[in-house]
Amino acid sequence: MKVRELRELAERLEVFQSVKDWKLEIYTKRSKSDHTLIGYYRYLNGFWRFSGLNPDEMVEAAKKDLKSVEKQINRYLATYIDRGKLRASVYAFRVLQSFFKHVADVRVKTLPPQTDKGIVQEGTPIPTEEEFQKMLQYAPSLRDRFLLVFLRQS
Image 1 (spheres, rainbow, N blue to C red):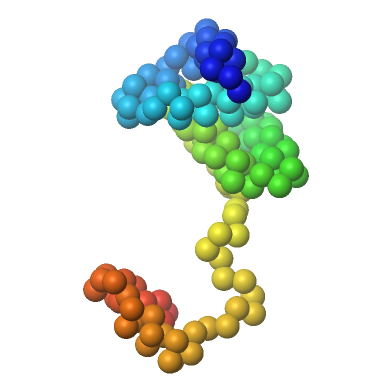
Image 2 (cartoon, rainbow, N blue to C red):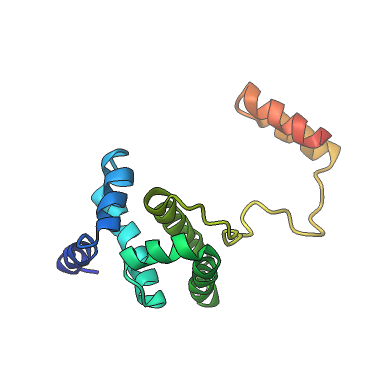
């Protein structure tokens, strides 16, 4: 998006009281960058367009029927997952979770999308004793050595 388009997006969203409140809570108090705020707005705008509700209506809907809003969130996140944008779906989930938490005082109980980052795949070999000793030898700090030993014993 171009700078002009991003400003227009911010102007469109900041008409709504819920967005103003959210911006005050998460942006002003935590001194986020403009880039971060625009990223938040892009996902909020996407959900707004997907659900057919404006941000103020989303807040009211969440207060009345959270389950319905959670289903909409899941369907919205599935659009990212279907396009192979798993990280974007996780980011979108965090943005929506933050919006509803800070504005509607509602905790979205649906689970976030899961990435496979950091998950040991089935059939992944466990390091041999020799490989483990090498990792331990080259660990840069006492903390890292402790973590290696702890993981090995668990």
